[in-house]
Image (tube, rainbow, N blue to C red):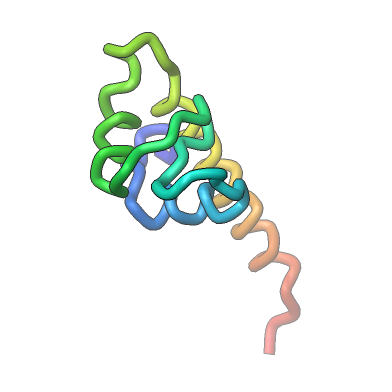
Length: 80
């Protein structure tokens, strides 16, 4: 199910906060291209396969890893 989860703006922002961008804009963490708006990077990710990139696959896998990590942290947290 996680492999088919849609990539949200929040996911893009979370990934980009881990990678400082040398220019103004938003960076696709997968291919390192910089885009002027958040909408343009989201569009790029959604249509990356048409441009010869696998950014959508990268973000889906990244999101699945974050969800797995989150679930493991919840399972390890002490219950009150």
